[in-house]
Image (spheres, rainbow, N blue to C red):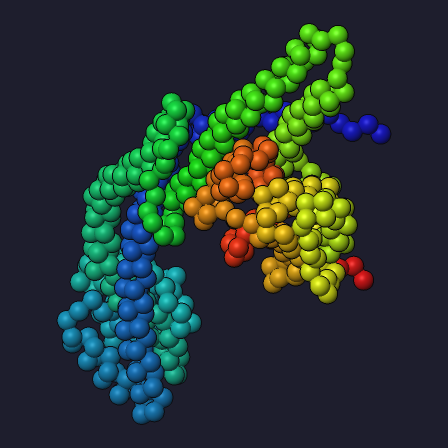
Length: 478
């Protein structure tokens, strides 16, 4: 059976009315809603005060008339009618808003200041509010009364005037009529003040956005030191973190552009010179062809590494994560680089007693990052004649270490060494000799570490450089 087509939703009449009354701007809407809430709250408070006052007056009246009626009942039950009459007559002698009607079994008035028993009030011990009751003095006023059955068929009615309550209620009503406009004014002023505060905070953030758009990348939202005090502080802090990241990325982009322009110029110039030389001769020299091929390979490696860094920083590759045996990876890399290390006169030492350590990682990217670190160690730290490879489990996860015993990197230059094309040949080379390299090895390792939610640390190996990559680990499969 085909399903019926859904009709488009249309707002109700109340929704259209509310939408028409609602201001257009966000700050105006906040001000309007705050005004309505504060006005409604003030009105409700005044109404509740009026009701509470009325309830309190009625409760006091009920308590007073109940005490008189119960005292008369107890005296009658204990000592007969005379003591009860004495109590009631004594109450009548006290000037005040009190009525008493003691009715005989035949319906005649035995004692009291009320000529006749009200028709709608039974003698059932309950309390009744009579809006208008005429007393023996001819006064008409609201009363709270109660009827009690007495011995031998008598009935007793005791009541208390509520005229004071009516006067108080009238006063409160007048006060309410005067207070509501004041409450409305206060609500409007409060809503405007709150709206102004919100608008100022939002305008400050918008100003920073405008400054950044205009090219002032160091603009930041003004936030207090310490933990955020409200949602605007949290948003400002998050915004500043984002701006700092954007500024860092743009700075790195400039560095990449400058680095590519600088590092591509020399190999391209050499490549062109060799090609021109080949074009001028009649015999192609195998050495010249090999040199051209080497220059092309160097360019391709540089571009390939730069692309891998960009992909890692963009988060590409997380869907290929799997459980990786880091211990086996270190051992495989040691076997692969052993011949190169021997040719360079370097001992490649793997941590003794290597235990199995695993991590959730991208095998190819992590292996390439470690390979770049070993390449750097062979290129810049071979003078130390030893390179150490290690992996260990930590409280936070796993740590991979590549350490050499060469000249190392000064502490003040390590941050620069992690940037793309951040080559520090004078510090890491052999004396004043400039070694070949694009300055991408450490940058790639740092990008791969961030891709895995980890970090990279450069420290002094005394002598030499120690590079540690910390990764979050997963338990080894059983």
